[in-house]
Length: 210
Image 1 (cartoon, rainbow, N blue to C red):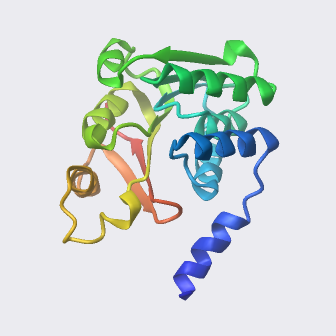
Image 2 (spheres, rainbow, N blue to C red):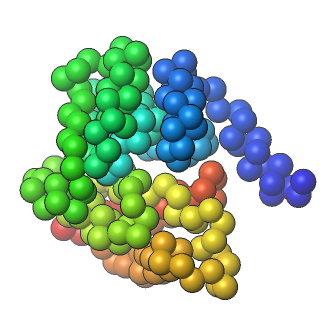
């Protein structure tokens, strides 16, 4: 194992997950739903806390792993979370209840993100998490920046897409879209951005212009 691989593994292993998150992660593995890694979960929790978020929107509920991290970091926040899979959202609802989250703090919206997002109010959220359908990631990030308040943050897990983005030989649709997104964001004056190599990558953008 290389030094970088050892560092990556250490960063993942040192995260102590709550019982509710551990169960949600286990259910995700059982159902083949890809959840964010522990290190990415810890990062988005810190970002939610630092943002003092009161409004969070999540594109891609999964089985609740990322939502639990976000709500854990922002105890006064309300989470709106969108997913096309109603069954997954029911698992997520159970995970939120198991974690002791008040039902009033979570709004689950079933449906396709590209149909739901245009109806959401712009500049209304402190944190936006984009973790759904990688082949539409650019479209979802554009919506996310519209929905984020000035000074709000848009987060994109899996930004390095299974290690494929850094390999110029890989040219499948999802990899190409993530690569294009990262290139465009790096030169944009509308956001301040950073890319973390933890987990499968985490792109963070803070909106600096309306």
